Length: 64
Figure (spheres, rainbow, N blue to C red):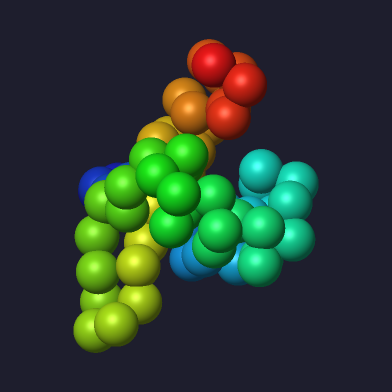
C-alpha cells in the first residue's frame, strides 16, 4: 500500500534559497508584497508550498 504524501512545504530560508536570494532580501521582498503570501503557518513560522514558489519563479518572479 502506498502512502499518500501531501504538498512539500518550504521554510523562509528554503524559499529564499530556491529563489536564489539571501534571506534578508527574501524577507524585504515579502514585506513589500513582491513574493506570494505564505500558504501555511506552524506557530510563528510561515511556510510556502514548493509549487507556489515554483509558479512564482516560472512567471518571472519579481520581474513580472
